[in-house]
Length: 287
Image (cartoon, rainbow, N blue to C red):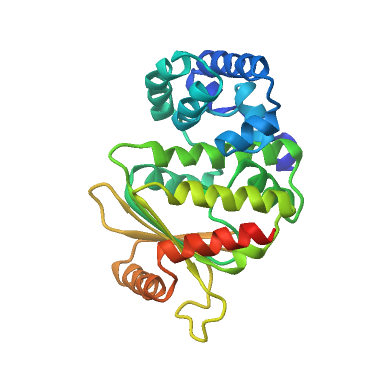
């Protein structure tokens, strides 16, 4: 079986020759955290990540994002040492290659250079918003079952795509999320809590708008699958859908226009970003 032939997944650092940088930073982060007397869970709460994510950063498996280094430098009394590494980290992140299943690579390449990204989700959080723990839960529940190594590879690849938020100039990004996504405890309440906190974190970015589509609405212009709309640099807008494992990249202008029209209607019907944020905060308090 193909699952059995997949080797141990490369980390982003291994794939792009930056292993030494992120291994060294991870060791430094761990030493500073332990000197401060913080557990991975305690430190994670302070910087907005779960303990598994902090463990991955300290082992050099996961890229340490610049905003984590900024917070950590102050929280761990690093005296500017972590801040000094940020330019090298940004350069390394710009070289990170996304590695995905063959059928997905065309879309992943377009996403990496897009100037606009718009997402509608109705079953699970979009990949660019997922925490590491949430992504593990999503792939862990996939049927037929995936091997542990395949799950780790898919999660690593998914997280590497999130570097799109660190690009400059920043792409325009928007989301319309069905309210049920705020209630569905994929992986359990603790993982959902971390995921909702991540929504609030990403929603603070000035180039990102997150809107929630209330379940109580009696009308809906898209009772169909989730989709993405993206505009690659110097190219026309395209759409991407995936249903029952069958992906489709849509480039026909008329089909793309219809999907974009539905998305515009949904944005008008959904809660504004400020009200959506308030709803997410309410859901967090109820957990």
